[in-house]
Image (cartoon, rainbow, N blue to C red; front, side):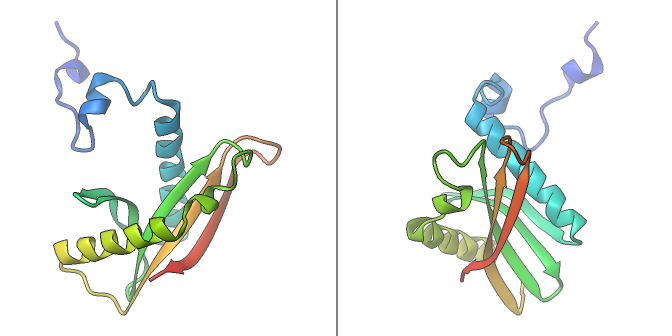
Length: 144
C-alpha cells in the first residue's frame, strides 16, 4: 500500500526538474534555493510581508517581492555563494542584470493590482561557509 506522501501530487512550487530529482543533484541550484530561503526568513524576521517568491514570466524570474511597510514595494535579487573566491555575491548584479530586474519589476506590476508609493530593487547577498560561517548583507535601493 502506498504511503500518503507517495500518492500526493507535487506542490505548486514543484517544477519538472524537481520532479525528476535533478534539482537535488545540482549543487548550484541547491545553494541558490538555500540562499533564497535564508533571505526570505531574514526579511520575515525584519517584519516584511512577502508578496511573491520565485515569480516567473517570459522575461525571467524574480526571487522575492516584499513590503517592509505598506507604502513600499521591493523586488529582491538574492545572490548566494559558498565563498568569495570568485567575487562577492552582490558583484554578480551588474548593470545588465539590473536592467533585467527593472523589466521584471515592470512585468510583475503589470500582472498584479498592486500600488506603492515607493518601489525599489534590493540585493541580498548570502555567503555560506568560510571562517564567518553564514553571512547576510542587505543592499537597499540598488535600482529603480
